[in-house]
Amino acid sequence: MEINGISGVGMSTAFPLEKNTSSTSVADGAGKFFKELVGKVNDLSQQSDQAIQKLATGENRNLHETMIAVEKASVSFLFMSQVRNKALEAYQEVMRMPV
Image (tube, rainbow, N blue to C red; front, side, top):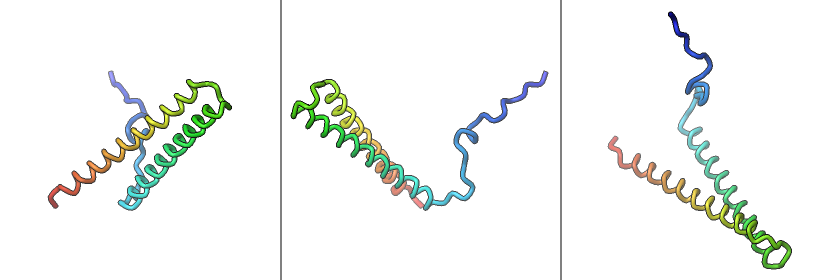
């Protein structure tokens, strides 16, 4: 009895490799990722500030919505700082490798 594999399922399908990947495209991808991450964290921080201001002026009376916005901004900032720390640790580890 022959068992055939499932076609179209695998790592190459989920994560296709680009043929001409160079170190500059990897660096550009990482730079783009960090730029988008910082932008999203900044947006959440601004939304948090606006929610606090609306609560303080009485325009918004929902304390729970304000606290949710503040916590989203806080958690996203902590996530960004942890990603930065891990990237920095990886860079330092690569720099310690003998050539």
